[in-house]
Image 1 (cartoon, rainbow, N blue to C red):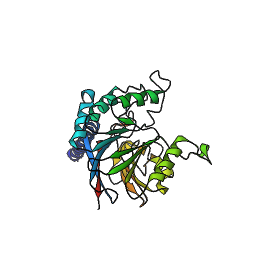
Image 2 (image 1 turned 90 degrees about the vertical axis):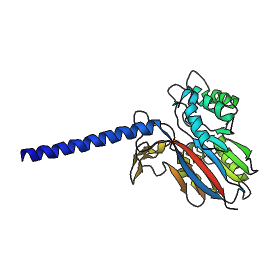
Image 3 (image 1 turned 135 degrees about the vertical axis):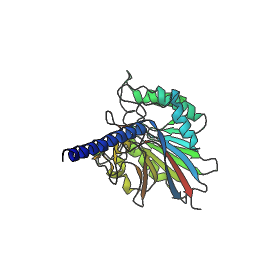
Image 4 (image 1 turned 120 degrees about the vertical axis):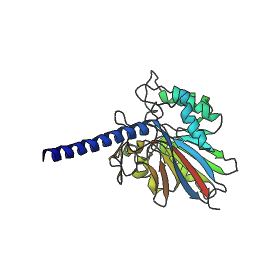
Length: 293
């Protein structure tokens, strides 16, 4: 009986050791290795296939000297252009050297479109208007910083795209009933230009804007970050926690569609403060628009 109890205890300790080692390896992998998440979206609004990359939420993290490792990973996807979905700086210090270096490198090869997240919209680093300073510095690299703005882009094969950068939610109650704000002005302009002859992309850092009401509008494709993929991802469950949505978020990572509005959420390039990513690798999002013509 004595030896039997000790044998069971030994087996339990072995199982525990394996679980601890697996968890540590998983955390290290999810905190250091850049991976691709790939999506294909079918559309009759383009004549040719279009591939682009989306990244988000590095929050001051850099990958290699001057972000060289991240730039190489993006280049490995061979995109037509790159979109950056915000929170590339950390609100605790506002240092934008890493993302500026990245934009400088990428802009030599691709069109780059950058929208602000909640971190970019804070004032820190001794600046009275940090967002204006950041946008000016990013624009100097050749990238285009979109703050409630739209731009037109023509692909190498001649397809015309509209790319709109939405800073925040257009329909907060404190702006009711007119909703006379820059976000709504941009959103209405986006809706007005939408037609069957070209594809329109809506870049918005927070996917909660989708669940709060944008899902009711016709949106070809909305691209978001912010959630960090739920930080910890549980098998058969999904993400554990996301800002605004809190525990077990409905919209944490991946492709969502209600037949009217379509959205992809990138799980980003950082964890959540002291909480490490688990079962949730760092993500470079690769989107291919497949022509159905």
